[in-house]
Amino acid sequence: MARPVAQCPIRPGDACSLCFPGATGPQDCGLVYLVQDDPEMAAELARRRVAVNRQRRGARAGGPA
Image 1: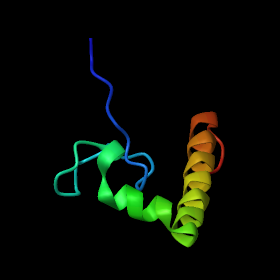
Image 2: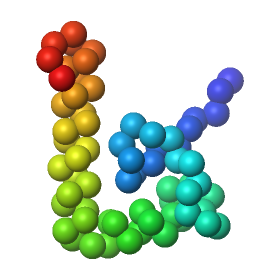
Image 3: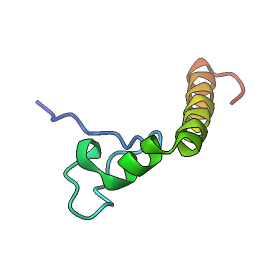
Image 4: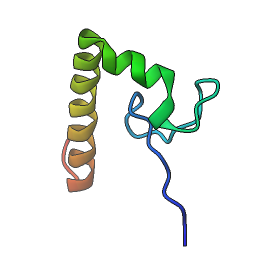
């Protein structure tokens, strides 16, 4: 059985690449903490996630992205 792949909360659609030194995944990533702790950055990330999700839904439905 395949193991689940942790998704990067900062780069929607990408797997966690352990880009932050010492991190074992998104749960202890310093970059994720910094972004989520800053209200402006967290809001921008939320806007980007919405855009990515809309694009994916459009691609799956065969409609415009």
